[in-house]
Amino acid sequence: MEGGDHLAHERKKAQFDVEAMKIVWAGSRHAFEVSDRISKLVASDPAFRKDNRPMLSRKELFKNTLRKAAYAWKRIIELRLSEEEASKLRFYVDEPAFTDLHWGMFLPAIKGQGTEEQQQKWLPLAYKMQIIGCYAQTELGHGSNSSKWWPGGLGKISTHAVVYARLITDGQDHGVHGFIVQLRSLDDHSPLPGITVGDIGMKFGNGAYNTMDNGVLRFDHVRIPRDQMLMKVSQVSREGKYSQSNVPRQLVYGTMVFVRQTIVADASCALSRAVCIATRYSAVRRQFGSQNGGPETQVIDYKTQQSRLFPLLASAYAFRFVGEWLKWLYTDVTQRLQANDFSTLPEAHACTAGLKSLTTAATADGIEECRKLCGGHGYLCSSGLPELFAVYVPACTYEGDNTVLLLQVARFLVKTLSQLGSGKQPVGTTAYMGQVEHLMQCHCNVQKAEDWLKPAVILEAFEARSARMSVACAKNLSKFTNPEEGFAELSGDLVEAAIAHCQLIIVSKFIEKLQQDIPGKGVKQQLGVLCNIYALFLLHKHQGDFLSTGCITPKQAYLANEQLRALYSQARPNAIALVDAFNYTDHYLGSILGCYDGNVYPKLYEAAWKDPLNDSVVPDGYREYIWPMLKQQLRTARL
Ligand SMILES: CCCCCCCC/C=C\C/C=C/C(=O)SCCNC(=O)CCNC(=O)[C@H](O)C(C)(C)COP(=O)(O)OP(=O)(O)OC[C@H]1O[C@@H](n2cnc3c(N)ncnc32)[C@H](O)[C@@H]1OP(=O)(O)O
Ligand SMILES: Cc1cc2nc3c(=O)[nH]c(=O)nc-3n(C[C@H](O)[C@H](O)[C@H](O)COP(=O)(O)OP(=O)(O)OC[C@H]3O[C@@H](n4cnc5c(N)ncnc54)[C@H](O)[C@@H]3O)c2cc1C
Image (cartoon, rainbow, N blue to C red; front, side, top):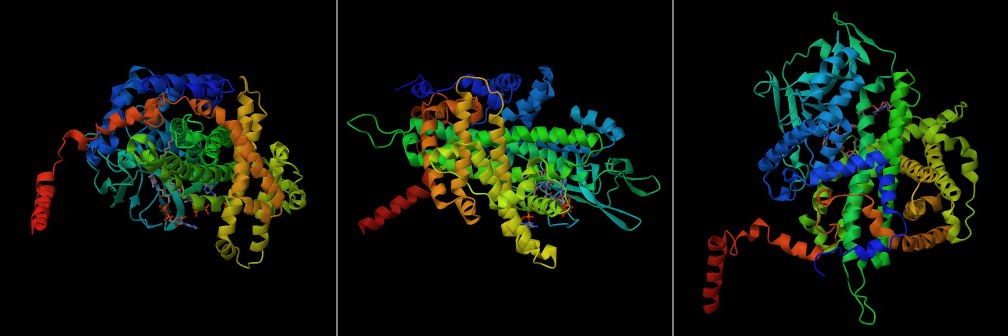
């Protein structure tokens, strides 16, 4: 079959209103319209071509990124795009660049930690891109106080940085503070006196994150004007006297709470993109299994393919909704902070840290699974999956290594439990800990597979598992005379307790989403199927936890798996429509395997001939290396 829509028969099977699902996925009709318009604008502009990235040398690649960033900025000005539209445009350009750090961390750091006066001075310059900034926290060796190492945008482009460094006044160390530092001349871009700055070198994958100039920075007797210390949290007077505002010191790390929240939303984008590619290709690809001379089986009909693919499809939706909720939580905590209410900051920190950890780990693994789900073709760059994986996988490390972040969540959980004794009632995502006595001894009353479809049953099982794992950790910790020693010794168990808690958050937010009014024929029902797949898949994967804590019986674990298989069958006819609801353009997907019309094989064949190796029939190097070898063999054969 040439041309046409090769997936049309799949699209006809959908049992829900895809257009309505697109609105749910985008978050609102307005968000959908902005995304739709801007993604098409980018897709239709040849200046944003990206299929040649894996073939470019680092220098060509980097220059190309600078060209795109400058062109994107020009279009933003010409079209008078709003902040929301401009950020969507950068998103659909789909190329990591210094601008990510400028808009995503430099500006938020000044907004969050600068005084009114400092904001008035620096923000207009940054908004007009008259200065370009980055966020310099990480060092080459821990607390080495020697070289900053890794900041994106630092290596070659940033004129300024927010640098995190120890503040020492009168010989007293006040800990880490943020400072705005000019790095390069605004006239000729040369580093200012005392500053050594450069790129740290090639990173994993061709193309991928190598469009970013992650950098190294050293200072030698560099003077930072006093008024360039970010002074919302603490101040140094003209006389050198240090003082602190009446706000928690942790606000110094507020930018990370903001960025981790955006990383969770971004996880749903990266995972949904990989899932869209793997789902469409799984419907196109046929292998064996034909009966009575009929067409061969689409690989998406194999139960093994479904049990690997559909939990990822469900996870993409789950991360979307938890990301939406986390955005709300962040907005809420920000409003409270402005009113000097700091009570929800620890929870916001724990939620952003934990969910960043969970969603990025699952997304990185999920992209790789999608590559395998596409068989050999998934390994071709033209599948879009190798580059997506290489770009995405550092999310497990940046903004805090995922294990380190889970340990922060564990500390928060142990603290929450320890405060129960003093009568402090937990709220928000830890409210369930208030029923710890019930959760320690409750019994799951699932008797048949369909009982696992009841939200209350699922929630109680996840709450009981999480509470029991945290309580077990707390009990074990109490056996140590030195709490820090205990925390280090039990860190493996603590990480698992933190994972259980974060999975509970994601499941409960998906269930809450389903309690909202969701318009569109069959939309809520499909989301219900995905929610149950997500929860029961986790339960199946972590059944060791659920069984060992006595939350469920082996029979109930068996029934959960039986129900899961039934849910896969319900998802199957809707699979293509569920990925169409992401509304991704072929440009954004960047994948022959995932193209909307499913016309995969002719496109793969055509693309192969565009590879530079196929520019000539006889390759460079043949005369030099192969021909002499062949001649040598001939001579040996004659002997
Ligand atoms: C819209 C566009 C978005 C664009 C996004 C662009 C993405 C671009 C890609 C990459 C950019 C990458 C950037 C970076 O990686 S920046 C560097 C990030 N580094 C880390 O995340 C390091 C991880 N470590 C930590 O977070 C540590 O907590 C610490 C270094 C901040 C501090 O360590 P330490 O001094 O040891 O203190 P503790 O960890 O013990 O914490 C003390 C206390 O403070 C609480 N706390 C910690 N962090 C926060 C926080 N962010 N907010 C609020 N509270 C925090 C912690 O819970 C402890 O509390 P206590 O137990 O009650 O005392
Ligand atoms: C692509 C990319 C972009 C980045 N961009 C920026 C940026 O713009 N600005 C910036 O400042 N930084 C940036 N970073 C740095 C990033 O924030 C750090 O790499 C990250 O915080 C992890 O720190 P680390 O590299 O020192 O890892 P380490 O802390 O050295 O981790 C190594 C191993 O030790 C384990 N470990 C470490 N501490 C503990 C502990 N306490 N308990 C148990 N295990 C532990 C970790 O789990 C990990 O397995 C970027 C990094 C990358 C990869």
